[in-house]
Structures are given as structure tokens and as C-alpha cells.
Amino acid sequence: MGDERSILEQALAWRRQGRGVALATVVATWGSSPRPVGSLLAVEAAGDFVGSVSGGCVEAAVIEAAQSVIASGTPRRLEFGVSDADAWAVGLACGGRIEVFVEPVS
Image (cartoon, rainbow, N blue to C red; front, side):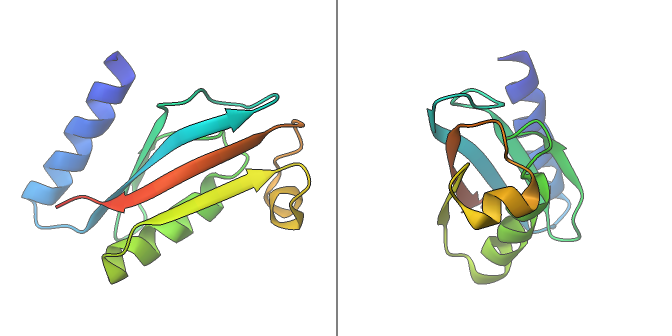
């Protein structure tokens, strides 16, 4: 919980500063996945982030989705997998799939 705790602390620090923040959490994996269930990525509105949900291979897409969640206030569920054209485009070629839940931090 050490890494997760520091990610959550950073997300809360950004909120206390008045910044918009979203938290992305790996909620399911299938096959070979780069990060386990429970992995976190905190994103603030300007694009600063801490943590990882994919070991780098889909982070950019998740960060973009997180910024959309911050703007709209509406959570999103994202899936990336080897059969997804989007996953290939962002680099998830590990042969597995991940599901990520992105929610605003209030």
C-alpha cells in the first residue's frame, strides 16, 4: 500500500490546492497485464500525474480520459486489450487486457 498511499496523498494535496483531480484504478485484468488490480494513477487538470495503471503503455490515453472526467465530473470505465485497435495505437501489446475506472476526486 506504500505506493498507493503516496498517490492518494498527492491527489488530496492537489484537491486542497483547488485543482481538479481524477483517480484511475485498475479494476480488472485478463491474461498478461502490465499492472495488477488496484494500481492507481492520479491526474490533475493540467496533466500532472503520479502512479501508473499500465507500466506506461496506455498512460497517455488514461490521462486524456482523466482530464475529460475532471472537466465533466462524470466517471468513465475504459478497457484496453490486445484486440483493441486503440490498445495497439497506445502500445498495449502484452497480450492481455485491463479495465480502468476513472473517477473525479472531490
